[in-house]
Length: 412
Ligand SMILES: Nc1ncnc2c1ncn2[C@@H]1O[C@H](COP(=O)(O)OP(=O)(O)O)[C@@H](O)[C@H]1O
Ligand SMILES: O=C(OP(=O)(O)O)[C@H](O)COP(=O)(O)O
Image (cartoon, rainbow, N blue to C red; front, side, top):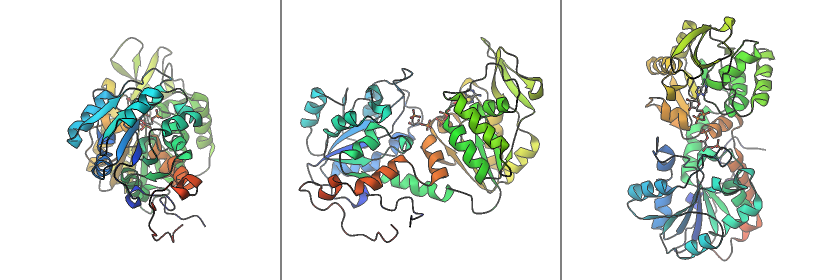
């Protein structure tokens, strides 16, 4: 029988023996540019890195940032400098993560050293989970510690792929995040629940809209999710953004709109739009349709929905509801002030959501990963770690001491 504990059967770094001079690969999900923006995704890994280094491990650190598909992936020396500062010890940077020069850099590491290798998103095959690439990355160490919750929903070479080649363990950062999110997974236990969606990634519609419209009482679509819903309802949306998978998102929105029961879906009467080449937003009635040369950047939340948000026992915000980074804050700030003034608990999910919205309450370092976890009570990396525990690599573990002293696994 499958346990409800999302960590059941997952090997934990906490329970692993970390021998002096052992070679570890730490899979992280820093995904932050040179301005470092919100550092939560880096800070989350500090304790695990310190623990491995203090135990005398040689730590080859791998992280993704941006994407090679849209040219946003860059070198990560800024992250190594930040880590050095925060850890109070040198953290080296080696551009490139595969091939002779990376292996030589790994070979020069001494007990306790931490070296960040080049951005994995600069490697062809990373985002396809290429196992040949994973095999090359695996040469940087003998065991893997998996942190990087922000990419826990991606079966990429530098997380799930590595686990096909080496014994792996969930870093404490991953465990903490899962334990923190677990009470939010599935259908809320009682009281009124609300979800506000936004941002631009397709997961907000494909996972978020689907899940929350089944499991919650109120869903307020914003960002690209709102554009998708308005189009599915037959409204003109001009040149509003529809994200990277418009067709799949359109089908998901149509299915949600056609479903019986489920959450009340907030559809605004007024959206705020910007004309191409201009910055100033102006209101348009949804029923009038957005002019062809305009894009939706914001919207006005109806008073009844603001009241429901304020009274919600539980609320999740996944993605900035409006284009905050360009100063369009009407929907976003309305949501935040309703939640701040309310009596329930509210949780923000994601990178840009946490970076762009002024919020000091609960937040997760994951956007898409957190949505997947809330919807499925698991995610790709947890499944792979469970499978990894049963593999030959894990069972033999070379000549190393037993990684897992007998523990209570009765929940498996
Ligand atoms: N109406 C909109 N049109 C286009 N982009 C939007 C819109 N509303 C919000 N956004 C943008 O979406 C981006 C974040 O999307 P996403 O990556 O999905 O969020 P997160 O990183 O929190 O998971 C932000 O930069 C935000 O300003
Ligand atoms: O920033 C991330 O996702 P998120 O914006 O959904 O939080 C993760 O680092 C995953 O990145 P990806 O969505 O480019 O695979």
